[in-house]
Length: 90
Image 1 (cartoon, one colour):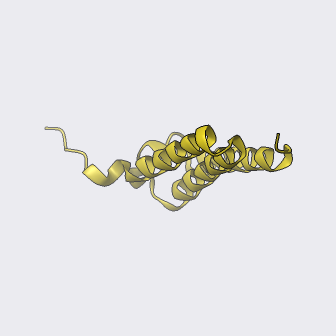
Image 2: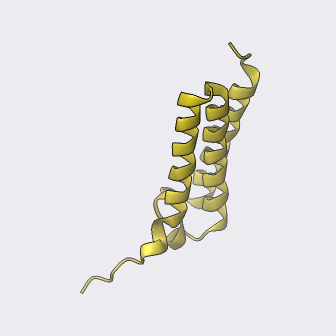
């Protein structure tokens, strides 16, 4: 008999997706730079959650090994934030 998944297992992923949704809404309404900063922060939040939570609790954030997932998310997060900060506003 299969075990039932716990309902809160995907909570870290849902939290990251909520921040991404806020970033997309901000990019569409308030300006692309603010939205891009929030998207970069969502990547950094995902990296922090992936590095701090065990694989069973990380849910959809756990794709590969903890170190590789964390490194990829950190690089993406810092790159997106740096991109938003270095391009001058139009």
